[in-house]
Structure formats: C-alpha cells, structure tokens
Length: 193
Image 1 (cartoon, rainbow, N blue to C red):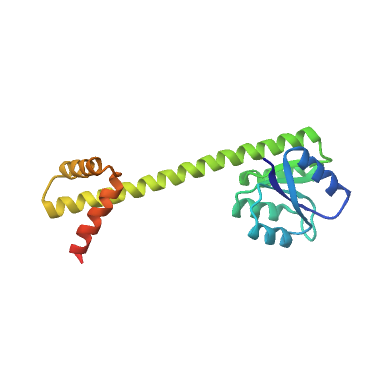
Image 2 (cartoon, helix red, strand yellow):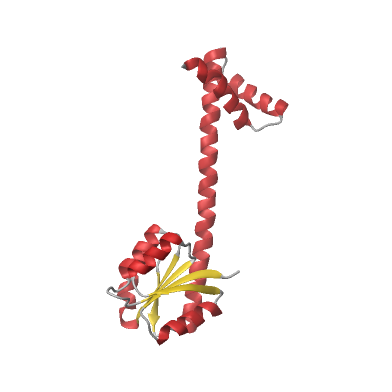
C-alpha cells in the first residue's frame, strides 16, 4: 500500500527528483504546492501520511510551516534544508518530531528518513489506539461504579454485594457488565429526579 505525500516546494527541477524519490519509497505524491497557505489548505481537506518541505518555500523558510503541521496534524514531516543549516534547524525542530535532511540529498539518508517517519507514525497510531482503549475502559469503570453506588444507596447493600449483583446479572443475561450498569442507571437515576 502506498503512502500519501504532500510535497511543498518552489517550482524547480528538484520537484521531479523528489517525486521520483518518494515514489521509489512507496509514496504517492498527490499534490505539490509552493507555499504555506496552499499546504495548510490541502491539509484541512485531505489526510496525508507525510509532508516533505523543500526549503526555502515561497515567502518563508519552511520551518514555521513544518512546526505547525507537526503540532496540528498526525503527518510525518520531513524538512529538506541546505547542509550548512541542517544542524541549526535540526536543533530548532527536534522536539516536534520533524526529520531534517540536508541538501543536496543523499538517497540512502532520504530513504532512511522516510523509514523513520513511517515507524514513528505506526508507533503513534498504536499509542493513540491504546489511549482510546484506556479512555473507554475508564469511562466504563466510572459507569459501573456509579451503578454500584446506586445499588448501595437504594438497596442498602455493600459495595461487594453490588459488584457481585452486576457480575451475576451480566452472566445470567449474557451481556457485558457495562450494559447491566447502564440498565441500573436508567432504573435508579429517574428516582433521583
């Protein structure tokens, strides 16, 4: 499966070379724009895996754009800068997860940089999925605890008995504990109103 790339570069012969390099590394270059405004407009409408910024771009050095993309999207960002500026720029953007590649471009280094971007994105996607799972689990725990509290309050039972009641109902009805808890909330919350 090909990854989608957005290329931000002033019109030049390097655009064709960069497109070719990206395509050799399993990317499809869907759009090429030459300024920050065009890049940001496209990023509002389309999800890209990676944005490659060939500096300088129209009216800017490209660093601000790279930082903004890194902060506001899940795209990997590769910033191409002149070799004499690469160290300085790298220090400026390292905390944003932006990969800096010196120009003229070494094909092997560029390929490795794209690999790092893909690996980071996979890790980020895994962490995001785990974070969502944990949020969902926490929300379910809150609902179940609320249901236990209502059972304790209205039936004058201990927390342990309320917990066992929810578990038994879930087992008997063959539904998840969260569904039992939601039914309890429907039953007893109306009494509180």
